[in-house]
Length: 118
Image (cartoon, helix red, strand yellow):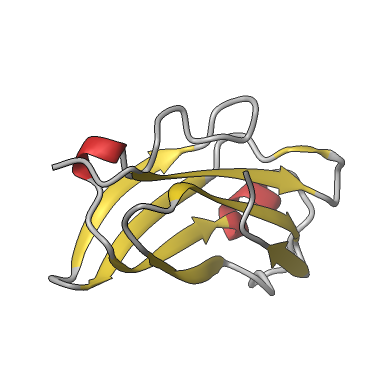
């Protein structure tokens, strides 16, 4: 049942001024019915190639995106050992009928920001 809402994401590497390509992103539904909804890896543009929740599969609830930035910055030679930031969780509440939800992550090995994008 479509609810006129869907979820997408992308990652920007602010330390190197480029898209965060090759970063694992997991989407977990926390309520209702906790479950791993999707796992993906960002493409060359730092984006999930497909919506994390397509409109036809949208279920309102509380979700958590988990961005695995530790391995990404380690591979670039920028992370401490152990990494200061490893998996960055971003918890959001998604409601039906709200259109496009977009959760971007701007990150470096030592900090991050996020917002509701478009």
